[in-house]
Length: 99
Image 1 (cartoon, rainbow, N blue to C red):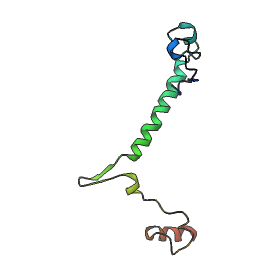
Image 2: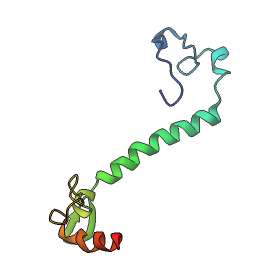
Image 3: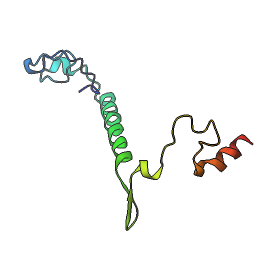
Image 4: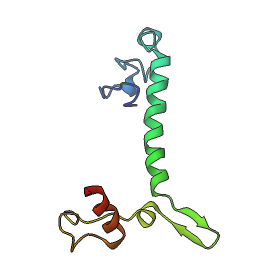
């Protein structure tokens, strides 16, 4: 409803929606631009689906399934500031980045 420009007037049940989204009356419906609203709803729907795909596990091979956090582990805050705290798999890349 928010992607359609609902202003939450809470008059849906009275058939008096000022934006024309939740009404059967023809007058408010005329102001709806369905082309624009369709694109907005599609964009709104795409975002949570994309976020869900990031959380879903991926099959690496027949015996191994990992999610993104396992595939791409994060690093702790400030760990690249001192070479003693830099993760081993990042150390060489970090050294080359400063060269």
